[in-house]
Length: 420
Image (cartoon, rainbow, N blue to C red; front, side, top):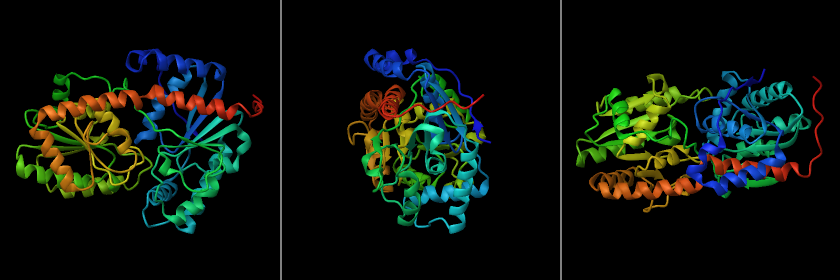
């Protein structure tokens, strides 16, 4: 069975003081003709990673403006998630493609899940490759189908994208973070829609410096010494080993510096624990390197505290779909250093609201610049926060979805409601 996900309540009006009244009014106007539309989001997991985080805010806001929205998680066993993790990596450029048996596993689970999806939806939004075959299997179950790609497919493994393309190219509407992620051969309407963060979520709401310091102390951080911090999943593409290497270079110049690597383990990422353990091994027992995850009682407030207290926030990805942790960190007004890849350059104006780097050495050099010049850090953080406010907050993302629904549903006939 597809697993329904319970979400809380949110009110669009609460965001008015942050994003401004004109955007809120535009959203309400767009939503008016869509009131009562039945919308279902399909994803592979309900926790861990950016997709789930987005949906916990986006869906309540869709409901608040009058849509009838559900979120359902597809069913999968370990064999399925092993195959889709391999697919995820291959679509981001890893050399290994799925075996014929793994492709069969992916198709078999999609067929199983498609049978369990109820009909009568106005819009079905399919998130990422895991359930991507659903449209080809049961197109009659929704009026409008949307495929939302959250990963960087700019240089995919050619065999993997060739196998996946027949399933995704026919979607009437698709969404990608940036134009370079759109695979050749996509049909339908392709939309470029960067994701966004929720400024009112516990992870992003304003924390006092005293509260942030208190939380950091609970995890053994010396709040009187400088702190470098990366918040991300434990994944080779996020390069936590490279962050440790950069920290070691910084420590030669600034011996009091500390490093926190903070991440969550996701249910659809079977490799996560292996790489978490590899990160611990690379740290080599250094007491100034703190490696923490959600199993150490690190939740949203703790992540907020680490980002809010850090002197330098890093996202040294070598591949990145978008990297919501970038906007989250910058929203705290902290100086930011990120890998010059994927969606990170969209969020950071190099040298103005943060720094983009291409190597361990460059990351270390920029970290030293910031740590030695607090005024520089403050200026970068202030400019960065305004850039995020203008471009990467959730009401803007809601508006973009409403525009897509309006365009996609405008020319489609009604779907019969399923019998009770």
